[in-house]
Amino acid sequence: MITLSVDRTFSNPFQQDDIERLQNTIKAIIYARVSTHGQARDGYSLDSQIDMCTVMARDELQLDEDEVIAVIEAGDKGDDPNRPALNFALWLVDHGIGRKFICLHPDRFARALHLQLVVADRVWSAGYDLHFVETEEVDPNNPESMLVFNLQGAIAQYNKAKILANSRRGRRQKVKNGKIPGVRRVYGYVFDKDSDTLVENPDEKAIFLMMVDWLLNGKDGRDMTITAIARELSLLSIPAPNGDCWYQATVSRILKNPVYTGRFYYGKTEYRQRKGQTTIVKKPEGEWQMVPVPAYIDDATFEALQAKMEGLARANRGAKPHVPFLLKGMARCGRCGSSVVAGAPSRSKQTGEIMHRYYVCSGKMRKVFEVGTGREVHACHGRNWRQDVIDDYVWRYIVQVLHEPDEMFRQILERQGDPEQMRQLETRRDLMVASLSEKQEERKRWIHLNVKGRVTDEELDEALEPLEKDIKRLSTLVDAAADALNAYELNQQKVDELKTTIANFKRYLSWDISMEDKHLFAKQLVKCVVLHDDEIEIFINWDIGTPDNGPDDLDDDNKKTFV
View 1: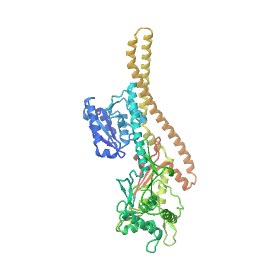
View 2 (view 1 turned 90 degrees about the vertical axis):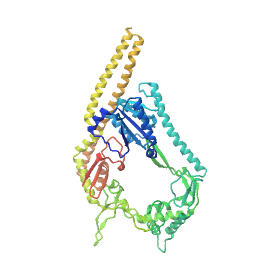
View 3 (view 1 turned 135 degrees about the vertical axis):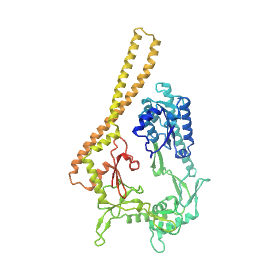
View 4 (view 1 turned 45 degrees about the vertical axis):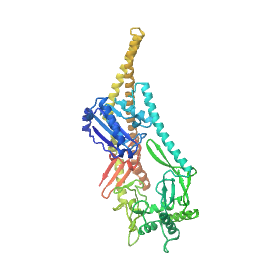
């Protein structure tokens, strides 16, 4: 049995030459899923799912293990429509690999009713049988079977929502009783699991009060900034909250936290799930819940701290760059993955005039100090990139694409669907339409014979039952093919609209446009630019018809590399 664990870094191991071999050897696809990475790491639930599905394939479907491919989803939520393993399993379905789709239970398949129906319909429309180990076989042509199937999906969705709601309600009630339902590390305190609250950490409390004194009153007659405090703590070998380094950002975050005034606020943010994705949403201040904790400073001291830090921030902001940068907000460092920002320019030693401006990795600019030595530690090492060279290179590429867009359009259409596959789909649709018409005519003939008394009602029912199933199945397949063709035609329409937009851009490019306008053009065409020491990777934003997931989900098909 072929077993593949598929995550978001997965690369399809099958080439075009493998598809025909798999079509001839693979008879079934097993799909297994767990929701958390902890479950995936332990492997018990996944192993049991695969074992039980394999037993069904062997005992009930009479399949050998080498006729089965198992696809494992390790740690993705059941209401996420963009699960990598599910997408890969459906890719196998679309390529006709196997004829049966096996899953332990509908709630492993999906935990949202609408998603369950969409995926099941896609499997059935491809001519596959859908089997669940822990439930009765689902017959898409049987109303009672589909009713049970839909109820299972609705119950799975309800159970998930109920669990989340109960958890939230339980945490809120805990806070009302003066307890904290778990918390991340808070410097200066220890979380007491017995009383569910924060208690004083004497050693860290003394360090915190020392930091407060340094910022407000200075140290040894000199003023202290946030950076100076982080460096001083490192030189004194004071342990950092996390790891062996004191970050400037860590000191700032500690001194801005109102918990040290004796008020711990719960519910400042809320986790919300939608389509399998979790987002953090800030809640109105009036909805926060307060839990009393030991106070280290009073409100007046806290306000003085905030005023001092705001004054330091204003003094250090500096002037904005006089020259706009083409790739502002679009560049990443190829060495460490951090964002790339505008850095300090180089100046002539004789005149002080600016010579060159630079892109700088933000990982090089973070103020981080090693505990014990006070040595400044940088997350990234390497040279900066000259802004004029990078901007000119990227802009020339954009102009080239805008003037010669045929290759871009070809790749867009390739990503949306192979034209040859679309023609084959049209042929299959026409054949299915013709077959559907024949079945409908045959049904009319049987009814006509019954009306004339040439066949009995029992004979009519016996003849119509398989005909009705065939008609329903063919209708579903015709509708699915039509949807796929309509989507392809819609993408072609979008390409035509893009051609018109590019034509307008080309006319505009003949003018002497400003860097601000160039930046706007670049944002329309470029998803992200990754700067390496010896090359530039330009990721083009031409993925029409799918949402833009941003630089974290870059696709190699959209990449152009220049040395």
